[in-house]
Structures are given as structure tokens and as C-alpha cells.
Image 1 (cartoon, rainbow, N blue to C red):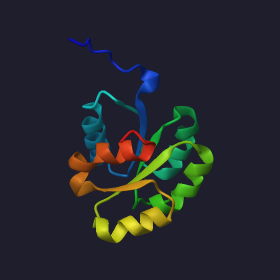
Image 2: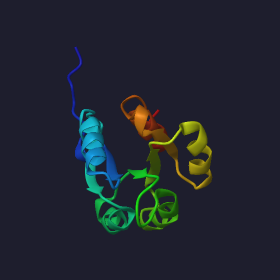
Image 3: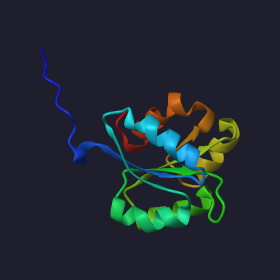
Image 4: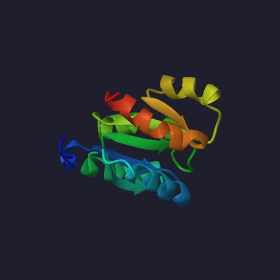
Length: 133
């Protein structure tokens, strides 16, 4: 029988959540905390706040809402690329995947997940983004 060895903090996938909905932030954090390989390192209510936090938090993945007041997700992508170049960006939206996915990928995001399919698709999108799948 093989012994279970927990992942050390530095081997976990570090995720920063960015969304203007506190309910979504809480739901996504709860969903991700169910997975041993994920460490939610922070949450921000908007892109501007997240851009201030990201260099210190050093996320592997930024889960970024497409539609937020102030700076929308697609507009924020180049700023995140500059602030934390190694981080992968997964865009989330309530919108239809077939409509948004091409625009998201054209904007240089690494993946897209519909909020309606979050529990089924989020972990796979994060793994794909960082090359663990």
C-alpha cells in the first residue's frame, strides 16, 4: 500500500480569484478548496485590486471574470501579463462558451470556463492552463 503524501504548499497550484461578485468569489473558493492540489492565495473584487495583489501573491493561475466594473477581464489581461508574467489566465463568464471562447483566446487568455459549468470544468481548465493535464 502506498502512503499518502500531501503536496507541499510550493507544489500546489496557487490561484488568485478576481470577480466583482462576492457570492461567486466565495463559491469558487469553496469549490477549489475541495482539491488538495489547489491553494487559493487571494481574492479580489476587481482587476485593479488584483493587479496590486498579484505580484506579492505570485499566483500560478488567475481566475478572472470577463465583465466587471472599472476594468473588464479582457482589458486587464495585458496588465496581468506584465505584473505576473508566469501566471496563466482563465477567464470566467456567465455568457455562452461558443460566443466568448474565441474572443477570450484572441485576447491572450489561456482558457475559458462558463460559470454555469464551473463545478464540472474549472479544475480541468486550471490543469490545462498550467500543463498538468
